[in-house]
Length: 405
Image 1 (cartoon, rainbow, N blue to C red):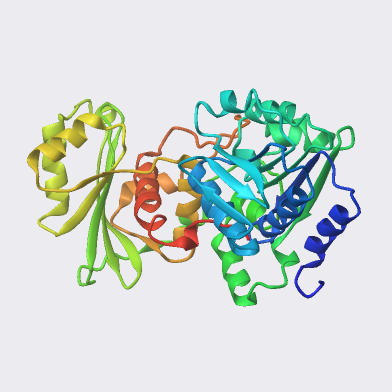
Image 2: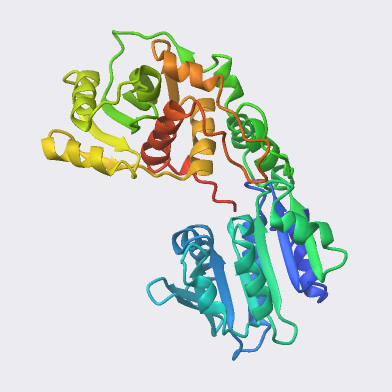
C-alpha cells in the first residue's frame, strides 16, 4: 500500500479506515500535490460504504471542469464497471449509488440542491464556489453520518472559506489536510523544477508553497523589469499571425499583432489610442482602418477581441476580411496563464511595443480589495494580452490547465 500512495495520501486513507473522517473534509494546498487523486479514491471508498438508497452529489465550478478534473479520472481509477456518468443527464452511478452532477456557475444550481437530502457530497476547487451555495450544500447534508470531501488551491486569507471555515475548524466538525507538491514522490523531478519556475509572485506562493496570501504589488514584476522584452527583429520568420484587441471608445483601445516563431508568440507591434487623452474619439470604421494598417497585409488567422465589443465585432465581420473570435475573458485565469506564458517562453514582447511595456510597469493588484482583482487603470494592453493567452495559447495546450492529480 505504501508503494502506491504518498505518506500524505496514506494518512487520509487511514483516517477513512479508522472511521475518523469528519463531516467536512478539506484537502488544500499546491498544484500537482496528489490531493485530487486521493480525494477521489477516498470519495469512492466512502460512497461504497454508504447506503445505496442515499443521495450523493459531485459539484465543480462547471460541469466541464468537473468532467476534466474528476469524472474521467475517477473512471480511470475504478473502471467503467464501477463508475459511469452522463453530463447531459447530470447523473452518474458510483458502485450502484446514484450521484447527481452540478456546476456552481449554473444560475439554477442552488435552487436545484435546495430540496435535496444528501448522504455525501464531493466539491472540486471549493474556493471557486459562492459562499451561499456552499452554505446551502452543507444544510442538505442532513442524513445520518453525511460527509463532504472537497479540494482547493489556496486563495486570499480573506476568502470566505478561510475566514468562515478553515480558521474555525476547531469549532466545527472539520478536517483540513494540506498537500504540497513536494509531498508527491511520483512526479518527475525535472517536471517539478520546471513547474516551480513557471509560477511567479502570488501564484507561486499559493500554487507551489500552498500559502493563503494577499495578492499585492505588481502583477507581472519580472515583465516590469524587462525580463520578457526582446529586440524587434524584422527578419524573424513567423508561421502564424493573430491580433488581439481590447476595444475602447473614450478608454484606450489596444491592439496587438502576434507572430508565432519556433514555439514562441511574439508581440510584433501594437496600436494604442486613448480617446480621453487625445480628446478624439474614433468611430468603429476608423478603428477598422487602424486594424488593417496594423496587419499590413499579413495572413492573420483570426482577430481575438473582448466579447463585449459588439459594435466593433459587427464592423469587422461586415467587411468580411478577417475571422473574429470572442475572447475568453476570465480575469484571474487569464492573469495566471499570462504569467506562466511569459515565464516559460511561450510569449515575448518586442521592444517597439512601448505602451505594453509601460503598462507592465504600472499594472498592480488592488490591495484594498478583499478579492483578487487588478486595479482598473493602465490595463488595456494587459487585457488584450490576457485575451490572447487565454483564448489562443491556454486553449491549445494542457500545460496551462492545472489538472491536479
